[in-house]
Image (cartoon, rainbow, N blue to C red; front, side, top):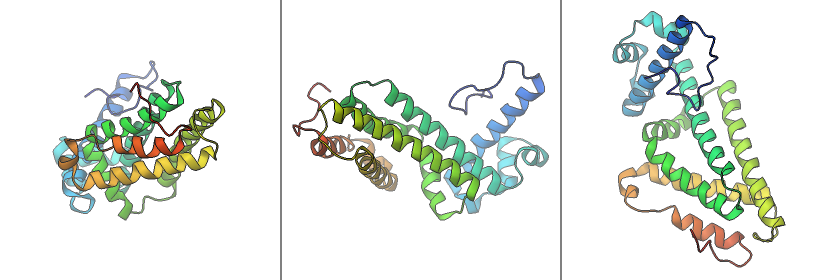
Length: 220
């Protein structure tokens, strides 16, 4: 795995030394291994020794990057949340039509869910683990950026007379809540939901509520 494979984009400066690139690669391999073990065995049942053994690194290498298991866990949650966040925002940026953008917002979450099942399991279990102010601040930043982006799409649709009049931010919050609820339910039984396009009902229910004519996109 290359040092940038675990990132949303390769943000590494080209002038990094070979040792610095190796450090980034090692850190990403540790995070990838931790994601696998945490999602399979849960946080409380995985030790730093387990991660070091699975990643085939010495304990000193792990502690070179992370002060503790909790520190590693927080870094993993934030990194994967950032990856998810930027993938969704990028998808929304590609759709100028407000209706198609909202439809894409819904479908991209389903795609990400099944592409990142280990992270989904880990993320929902993190609700029972205190991540601390630094990690929570990062996650809240991603949430707020996402909601602001959705609100701007709804605002554009309202001005274009596509969506009914209303508070764009409230529409964003409503959609956000519906998607989170579906993802939470899907996490309970991923295999059962994999066969269908259950989020299509979100498009029908939500869009019929915000579109002026009450009709979904007939072309999609």
